[in-house]
Image 1 (cartoon, rainbow, N blue to C red):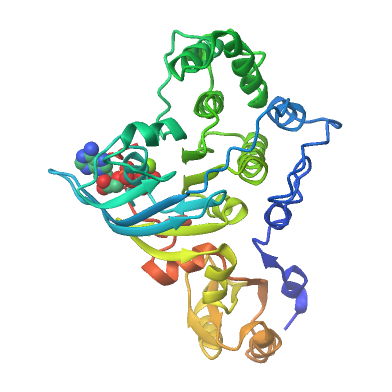
Image 2 (tube, rainbow, N blue to C red; image 1 turned 90 degrees about the horizontal axis):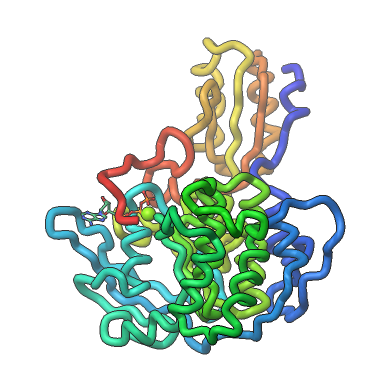
Length: 388
Ligand SMILES: Nc1ncnc2c1ncn2[C@@H]1O[C@H](COP(=O)(O)OP(=O)(O)OP(=O)(O)O)[C@@H](O)[C@H]1O
Ligand SMILES: [Mg+2]
């Protein structure tokens, strides 16, 4: 076989940003628990990033000794599904918990219950040491939340929102302006601060919503799909800010997402939810290690050779979903089988356009647990309007 496909052999999806984040090496960030401060103010970076890296860091450590403890939590809608179907989870204080799942999985419904906005049908949940049903006011005093649909008033400016929110949280009048400005700077909205929110882009609204969630130094932060609508730079900057809040300030973060990379990069632990049930739980590394073996994906030069390639690959493992025009299997013998695969394809006279090794990803974990893929065609359909 011509070896041209082999030149493209790559371990896909092992993003540098993921490994840098995991190592706590984002520029301007110190490793988790390092207690240091953002340092770099140089270079050409976006307003949001600049704010994060250069903005004033005037918070004290707000870590709570309690995280989040959920047991048997259920929410059944009268004319709808059992949206959350008996979930158990624990989030350690100061950890980032990534709640990953497709449309309609039950993520927002869980967030609404944990933020006291929706009563559970059954089960218990304690957030920052307080029961969400019996101690709602105490929970609300300690948490911040940026929900899926930001509750913003289009006729108010960003600064007016901050003024209102700081007043609602009882921040002394003399400190309100400073706190509001500090957070507007942190999320890169200084220039837009006096514009009406009705004219903000989707990403600007998400950033304002995050700033509003932080005014009272919450010990626990809920973020429901916080990076939807953000451009890549703003998304990375938000990841940095969330990592900083947890790492430097000890904030416990419960973050929902449909993005595998987001959960992989940010979360200390991940819960994968599907149809209201947690189907997998653990650190990103442990979840992927459970899958263990990599897969190999082969694109034949000729479309009509797909079946022949499939037949050769069948000797090396079971088929897994692949991209269009490709054939993929999970390698029974791991990455060490790759030379034998190449020899077998060559021996069968099959010319290959591309041959790629994929290390296990969180999507493989999702696929193994649910039989569907979170990415691409296999993602589950939205069953009805979401709660968020
Ligand atoms: N108020 C409601 N009444 C009836 N059904 C509801 C209600 N809110 C949510 N649901 C249903 O509960 C299920 C879970 O919805 P939820 O909004 O929690 O999902 P999600 O994981 O946040 O999805 P998405 O990623 O689309 O935001 C869905 O089937 C949804 O249609
Ligand atoms: Mg949702």
